[in-house]
Image (spheres, rainbow, N blue to C red):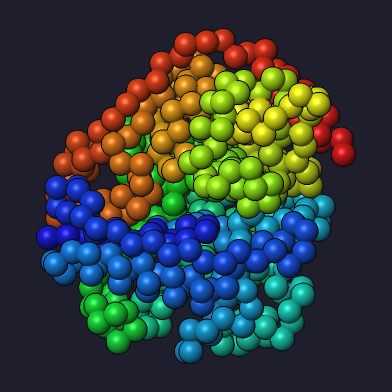
Length: 488
């Protein structure tokens, strides 16, 4: 038996065929377009995401002779999508998690947040990052569309909900608890939409999907709409929760960092909801079929791999993202160049949506190799800030940081990371832990595996990086640069 796992990321869709022994048998990948209509705005065309999904799934399925038995889905979180409940077409582009346009609502929402009740109920700060303010933007700026929401013509959701709608031919309107917990409309305690939050943001419950567990019999694909495949959808989770699951971080204190477009650090807190004093988020890690919730503490870094993409696409100092390591190694140092990659604001633990990026410490002798090295440092510095905040909340340092995602293949950056956090960095055998995690959830939900304990050996460590150097002075200099940058 095999599993079809769909990972709908920020820049493309990956499809994996995963065996019952946890091996990746085939894969497909298709990129889709990023739209930047104004400074600080980031949009996706939902139809392009759907076509990329079909293309990737077709490639993966054709790459293996055996038909998969179930489907797992994971996705970029917080991105807001609206679609017609009958035609499944979207009347406007999706507003992506990186989009900062809704910062105009921050003051208004803070005034409604007396006693910080929104954060206490949802685990989330008032910030444009989360989905609810994106729905609110449509309500305020596209009244003709919002009339359709109120009348029942249009549904609201995140990427997982949208994909299930397309895959099922419109038969199912669902989201899993991990994705729902990122909308700022769900109570962490009840695991359901919260009426007071819905009223605060002006969102009709009727337009929202039903909240399901993260594994089990969740929906069914429609063969007419989905490449002739009629399969049960048995696993769903937001990308970072899926990565924690794929890293088999099932125990209290297990911590992972996924280096993708952003970098996301999650620590399993089991049944405890940790409302952070140090700029972190509380979130649902996953919900089991008996609706028992496992929670996590999370730090969200908005720009990680996106900084490398900026070097490639805008500055054009590298031809491909992996080439950044070779360029950085030519210098072996930033030579005093400091990069604050606030290209879409700063996330945890700083939470400054309006700050822009900066380059400091440049001289006539500064080279592209110095900038490449400074970029790797900047990604690791941001993760260090989150790890330190987690240690403050927990009252103890993490024992090790499990890593995955494309940039985790960069040995130079992983060594910098280990030096900075003063703990072992453990690189997984499978760097595609996000899609792999969705596959594990689906396999668990379909009965391929009978328990979570059976999953523990499916993604072992491949390489470990121990701390070798003290980089404290460089980190303090970077924090000073963040402070300076935040004043502009």
